[in-house]
Picture 1 (cartoon, rainbow, N blue to C red):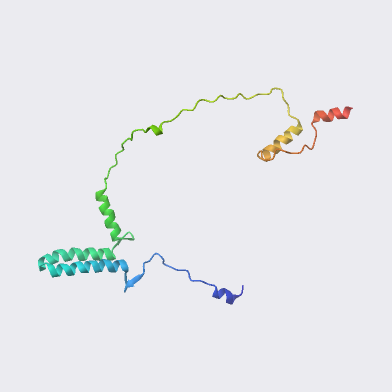
Picture 2: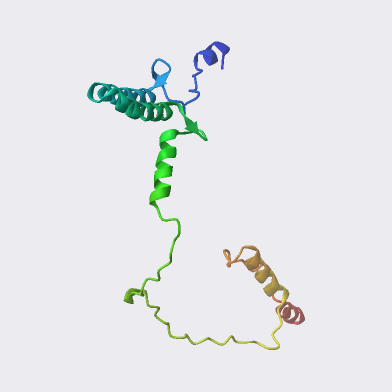
Amino acid sequence: MDYWLYKYMQYKVPQNIDMEDKIVGPLTLIQFLYLMGGGIIIYVARSMVSVSVFFLIAIPVALLSLSLAFVKIQDRPFANFLLSLALYFVRPRSRNWKKVPELESNKIILKKEEKKEEKKVYKNKTLSEVNLEELSYVLDTHGLATNKKKTSVAPEQEIKSDTK
């Protein structure tokens, strides 16, 4: 491939895809919404209540909205930390095991014992070289190819055919 063709086929791979886009100045959309929500609550409190009550409302709301917008704990947003904190206080801290009564569908059905077939043992049986070759071929092929052509004759038959 020529260099000029290779040069035009290059693509830019996106970097930092886990970072949120900056929408309003240096702020992301979520940060802007947290700050705008806190500002609206402070503005409404200023116009509705007296100055002494206003500071009791404005300071915690300002701290909460600033921390929601900018504070991260272990690289996770502060909102996730608050949610985990709330779930910690709501959920039980100890677990108790309660045994569930057995249902009739879970009963075990015992199978009848099957008769064991006795293996037949052949005594005084010898294997010839041909039988050994066939057995080794079956074992080598893992039983997949059992039809091997007999290339030689059993030794007993060779002796009989030579004497006639």
